[in-house]
Image 1: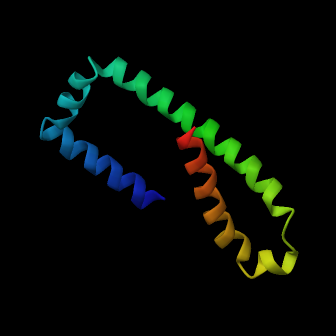
Image 2: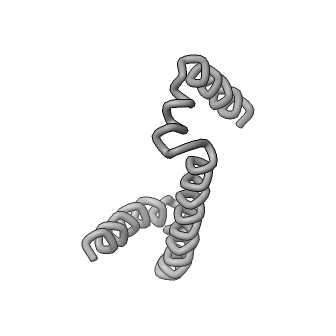
Length: 91
């Protein structure tokens, strides 16, 4: 985790040095607009993940403990999640 944070800070500092951060902010009409947009994206993403987690908890009920232990749940959930996401996109 610390390495990921250090990498993100290093990347940010390099982008700032190269003028990319200013360009990014300008594309949103300022730093505050960028932060507001990212906050909204994060809020929506968290809401979607919470919804998907509730669906997964329902899906888990279809599996035995052995199936879960052997990894069948995660494999099949990945397919089921993609199916759910696709159906939502098509709506």
